[in-house]
Length: 240
Ligand code: ADP
Ligand code: MG
Image 1 (cartoon, rainbow, N blue to C red):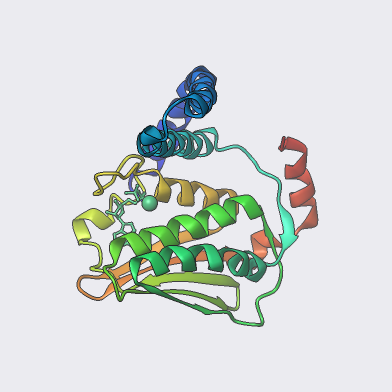
Image 2 (image 1 turned 60 degrees about the vertical axis):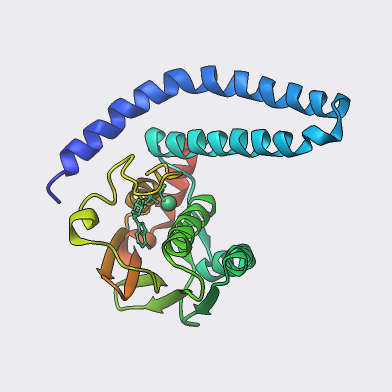
């Protein structure tokens, strides 16, 4: 992976910068949000529409900052032995609601032999949501998003497949670069975040895509890295 050193170096530089400015940005945003709420109570309801847009955009800016931070900090997180399927089942209604609004459908195929894995639930939730949303954003209506799990000999695979337009080869190389996006409203932070989450889990993420047919993102959790309990306990010491 030709850019790996640069990738790591870039992230640590970005991380240092981010740590410095984050609180400076978050605090005034929280103040703005608070006063907006007060203003709404005293303003005519004809402004409700504007209020809603301002709040949504403020929340969007917040989630960009949060994604950016989780990407930039890249620190050890607390791992727990837990069920991947429980996480998928918890997220399905969320993804389903999103798909439904777009006229798309969702299929979930879970391999019942998948064992519990050492995971950080919050991060894996974020990963599945990012991949699921990317899939939906790529598809038109009538698209189908499939979440599938499979046990292999050396680990567990999670596949997120869409029936979208696929990804041109030239773009495929850049997918995991921070800030690479083809969307007007995109941040280009979703996939870099997924990559760094899987690095922390000792796993892998890869993509296979055929133009005109669709895209599959494959997330791999190796058993080897996932076994030792001390590892989880060890990391827990670093976590907040
Ligand atoms: P964002 O979604 O904010 O653009 P991501 O890092 O999540 O950032 O994705 C980066 C880019 O990768 C997207 O802008 C899109 O061009 C491409 N991409 C990601 N997932 C898919 C997919 N399932 N199908 C087609 N293109 C995709
Ligand atoms: Mg995305």
